[in-house]
Length: 142
Image (cartoon, rainbow, N blue to C red; front, top):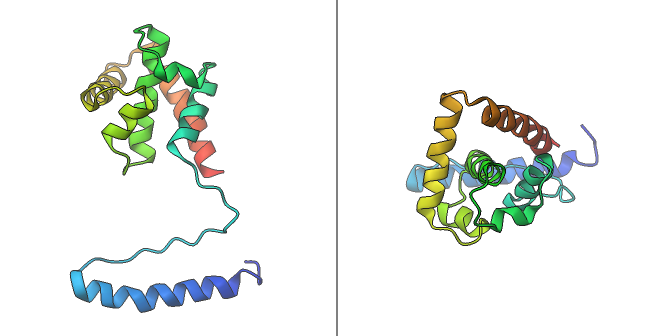
């Protein structure tokens, strides 16, 4: 560990320990503190959507298109599924907004269809999904 960073880490740990007990006693919730360097850029849902579009050799504007072409539908299905997986706090309404103002029920349908396609081992879709998933996993870990 870098010695220049260590004092800040120890300070953060101390603050977390001092804060954890009163919060736990008051409402039973545990506190988790994540220490990140300030220069580390946080990944956003929009960044992930752009990455997915790039992996599938498409433009990020394709999310907004209301066309039922197989490649575009696959793009939206995969993006919706991975957004829910990597950003669990994102709402269905937010995902729908990213897809051009769709309704949240459209996203629910996309998530169900994605699960169905993966369970039925649709060769074309599963190959795309797992390829994108692997690349996004590596991107998240960067």
